[in-house]
Length: 174
Image (cartoon, rainbow, N blue to C red; front, side, top):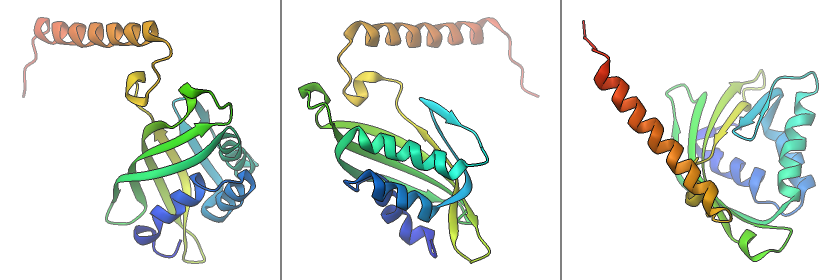
């Protein structure tokens, strides 16, 4: 990218929205460094000698199992160096399995990108870290209501426990 502030939305769209997975793979090669890393709550990808192949494979597999991918940007933020970017977006997609409950699934994502300025003067994505909501109902996954209830109970217990510990342990500020 020559100008990441003005080009980043197009780059993200080119990684998510193309219909053919091979086009997504070509776009990964076009925008990621050869030693790029990618991670999210479902997997962690560390640097490997063939890192560009693994990042490309992850994007292609994700694209292979979904169709009609669309992106709606909620916000894009850069630091003053343009080397760190945070993007809030909603990705909407359908599954290739054509089940009603897997159609038109909207997933809010928070994506953090580290950009590296190459010798060619262009910015390349060197690290991507994506986060998805931990509340399954927020992303429309109401397939397992008991799983959602268990998650809420754990979250509530953690919140109450943290508050109780905070009350019990005297905290003094210096």
